[in-house]
Amino acid sequence: MHNKKIIFIILLSFVFQNLAQGGWFDKKIKVTECYNYPYNSYKHKVDKLRSLQIEGRKVSLIWDWELNLKDKTAKRITSFDGVLDIDELNLIVTDDYLLVKETSSIGNSTILFDKNTETVKTTLNGDNTTVHNCKFN
Image (cartoon, rainbow, N blue to C red; front, side):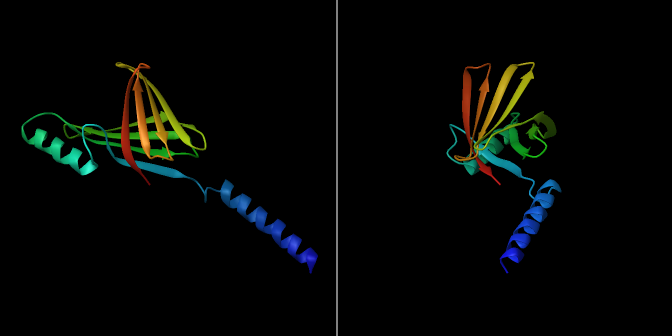
């Protein structure tokens, strides 16, 4: 009887290992509904930006992320003045943090995703930092 339990545990561990390698436990995180100061909620941000849009000002209503932990890629989905754009960037993965580094025409950006606090900290050129509260799914 004892040998059957050991064999069952070994077989079960092989099954879980194969499922994990087959992509059954892939982890993807969607980061949505981000807002930062001076807004006190995502709804408040959307309401204010829509009123600016009605006044004819160009605004960015979407700043979402799809983080693929298995492939270590981050897709940034943005919309500025009604034009949708999707960029794919490399993702650095740790247990508690996810990090994206980007070099663009405006400088070097670091985007730090904190899974524990559900915040996103963006830093431009090492000194200009903004903290966004977001929804992590």
